[in-house]
Length: 324
Image (cartoon, rainbow, N blue to C red; front, top):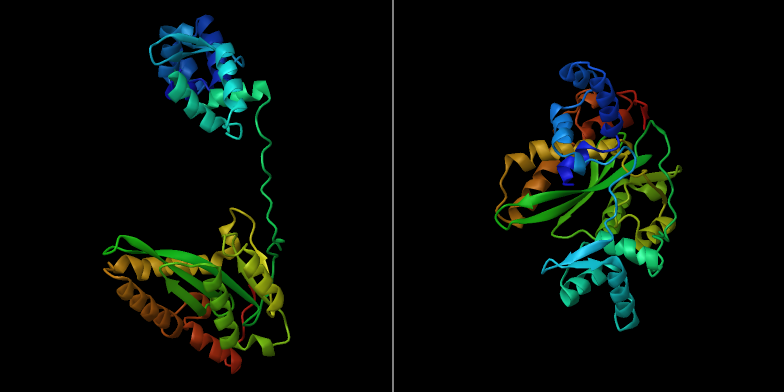
C-alpha cells in the first residue's frame, strides 16, 4: 500500500473506520456517519473499491516472504538469507544492513530496501550491537534563577548569517548579560569552533572584570558541539564561572540570547544583502554597537543596555529582578 493509503488506514483512523462501517451496515446514512466519525469520504470509498488492499484492524500488512529481482523473478526470503550468510563470511563481515543491501542489489540484482534487509539480519541474529552514544562531558542542567544584578547570568549562543555574493554562511557567537541585555563579547567569522568560543568568553571575562567579583558567574548555553566539547568543559572548570546547559528542545531557557538573535535577524540581516564577508562583518559590528549604546529596550525602561547599567550602578534606577 502506498504512503498515502498507509496514512489513511493508520492506527488512528482504523478504529474509526471500523466503527463507521458498523453503523453504515445498520442502514445509517454514509455521509452522516463519516462526519460524526471525522473520516474523509475518500477513506470509505477506497475501502469499497480496493477491499484486497485493506487489512483487518490491528493485523498490519502481511509479510509476503519473497522479493523480486530486476527481471521480475521471485526470490524467496530463504535464498536472500543464504546470500546474507555468504556475504558476512567474506571481507564484508563488518558491513551493516545498509551496505549489505547495496551488495545484494549489485551482485544479485535484487529489488529490495534496507528495511527488509534489517529485518532479515535481525532474524539471522547477525546485527552488530548498537553503539551507545555517551557524552564524556558532565552536564549541569540549567536551573531556575532570579537575576538582580549584572554578571550573574550570561547566555551564549551561535547564529548564522548569509553572504549572498559568496553564497556562503558566516557565524556569530554572542554573549548577552541577562540583567542589562548587553552583548558583552562576540565572534564573527567564516567558522566557529571551540577555540573561538573560549576566546569570546575570555574577552567577556576581561571586559567585565569577573575575577574581581565575589559571586559565581553562570554561563548558560544549549547543547551545541562547541559547548559540549572537552576543551570547553576543561576551560570552564578552570575559569571563574559555572557552565550550565539547557535541556534539549527548550530554547525558552535561553530566551534572552534568542530574543537578541530575533532582533538581529529583523533589524540587520533582513535589511542588507551582503556581497562579501568584510561587508557583513562591518555591518554586524556597527549593529552591535548601536544595539548596546543607542537602541532603546522596553524591558529596560526605554534605555539602551549601556545607559541602563550605568543608571543602575549610579543608583538612579532601581534594579529589576528577572526570573529565568
